[in-house]
Length: 391
Ligand code: SAH
Ligand code: SF4
Image 1: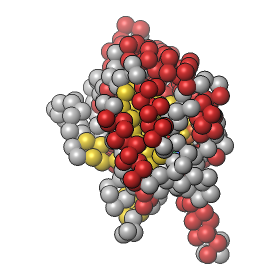
Image 2: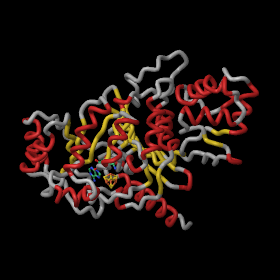
Image 3: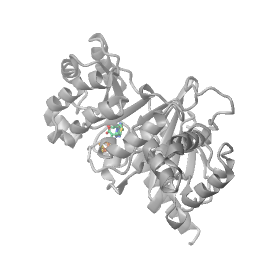
Image 4: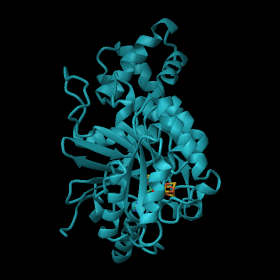
């Protein structure tokens, strides 16, 4: 394998909001309106000003109040006195030989999360993080061994989408239609670090911004939220976000799922399936994606495949088979290709689409479940560099 193209972008660290200034990125339309009223915008004008600002921020990607030419000059000055427009800072950007890009992003407090862009034919998916680390402890997931540091804010979540658009050069030109078809960044998956449904409000507000037709305009069917099975929040996701849902299923008996996805001890397979059966009705969406990591000798038998088929009855579903991505010290190994194919065949014969996911960006440790190790590695290598340089 060729060496990955690594680029360190030593951006000038963006300053923290000075003097209690509010960052506009991540505010909902309502919160933005309130913020404008709070600085003296007459209530009558507030809706129009909100719309104008919204388009500058999320349609044009403008970061400087001075460039917002349809706003009066003195109003632009007032805005700059009270507000800032800030994204998380990109610390490093790596490009895999398969075109996958991984950004290490620094958020307030010096914490770091990873964001992965996966180009595909005629489209591209951004894998977004919702938390620093994860409080859950799925036994096959490296992120789960990292202690949660904190939830990301809505601004830090939508900021990941915006910085990727910056890097892809994808803010529209004047006069361009606001159609997401054919965009480089055409889809979002909440499948990075963290459990999105343990950070519900911030994830919801950020995704509302992503979906808004006067801004980034990625419709709700272009967004997939992945959960390990936080049952009470699944109905809320249908009602309040309405995006597509993926569930980290990974086992067909409670005994095995209790070990792989310990949240199963709280909400078991039967309870989870009840919530999933309701999801498409409430959100008016299509199939639910069942993610299933293939672990040698643990969950990959023919019996598992048949049990999975039985469980899926009555749920519009597709199954994503994920070959296990190994990490240092992982207690599992990946199922053989033949085993994965045999498992997929049983599902396909029962009528379920069951693509085997090709790991992307492995050379830059950007594949599913590798995100923590990537950060640790880069930390280690930075420490090593410092040691070698005698610092
Ligand atoms: N916390 C959420 C969102 C993360 S999604 C969730 O668990 O759904 C990341 C996906 O990658 C999940 O389906 C997760 O189960 C899977 N995953 C985690 N570690 C993995 C590994 N080492 N190899 C393959 N897939 C893994
Ligand atoms: Fe957390 Fe998801 Fe990893 Fe489980 S699989 S530890 S829920 S990030």
